[in-house]
View 1 (cartoon, rainbow, N blue to C red):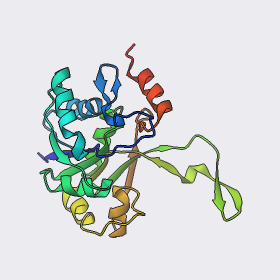
View 2: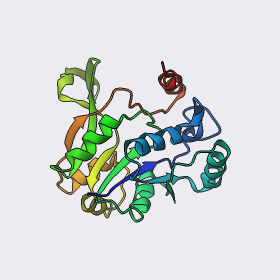
View 3: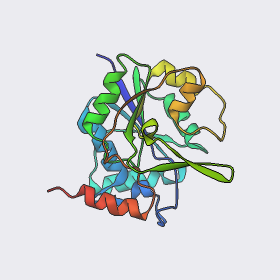
Length: 222
């Protein structure tokens, strides 16, 4: 059986939510956002190796928080670096899976079906990315002009982005540059091909107060 790992990136201290506490530690329902995310992967596969990247100054806070709420899902902790790139590079030295997923810590509503599609597709492809189609009309800006483009030719990128271990580890041997947008882009720079699978629409990234309001609605069970 192929061993699987997931790196959950929660190394940022973004302030777009307007809170002093980093958004990954904010409560939705009765759990921190990051705990919901960890749960999603643990419920998918209880044998999955889970590693979380955290800001150095917030590691003790996280350990205290999960102790206080009785959160016991096993997961490793890696201290994040200066950028997301460095955090993942650090985490890649600690995981043991032949197939590795990389997921945003503030995407707590990823479905088991999306995770399964990503991992299963690695049986045929070296790099897999979950996507959703655009619903809105979009226009492209070019200089001082803008023009309509066909939304059918574009996709919104989600995580988990999944890879063969040797593929993603080789990709992260490249030098960091400011124009790195995601893990798949690094693989693409080495000539790798990216395969799309369908994500679930609820797999939103919580970045601001509006997203938090949506998350509070999504967490409510009928």
